[in-house]
Image 1 (cartoon, rainbow, N blue to C red):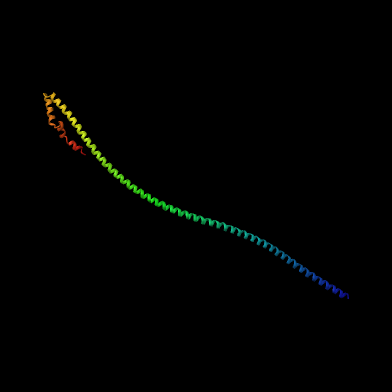
Image 2 (cartoon, rainbow, N blue to C red):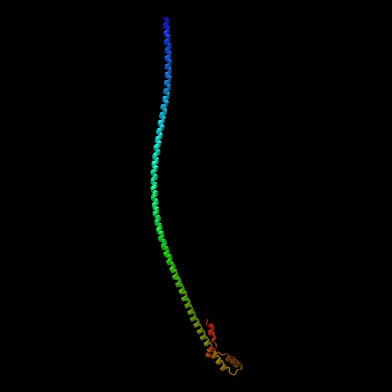
Length: 206
């Protein structure tokens, strides 16, 4: 009986040890699973945090992209408006340039016409002045010749008077007679003397 009781106690102890071993094994496995689960939870939490950060960053980038798109759309519209304004200004400037070109060409044509008319008038004035100058020169030369001839006639008259007076006063003097002979041989007395000097007129007829 005691042997059986001891045998049973041994079996119970062995079973209890086996149970303790199984319990410890299960406990270790559970601890390991808990650690792995905690790690997974931690990783999941980190992943969720990272995902949230990525979503926030994506949202911020999307908002910035939309803001940039709106800004670029506004700038593009402003650029189109500027281009239309510049095109209108260019057309206006081209129209003004054509108008100014036509006005310039008309002014040049008018100036050319005025220049031709002025040149013609200048030429006519020069011809008239040349003709007037020639006429005046001829008149002046005519007056100069007539005045010179009148002065020569007056001088010869004075010479004739002096000659007659000297001859009357010195008729008995041989020297006076010789002088009178020399003077008489010169055809220069009175009107006849003027006729003998008609070559002066020809020399003055330039």
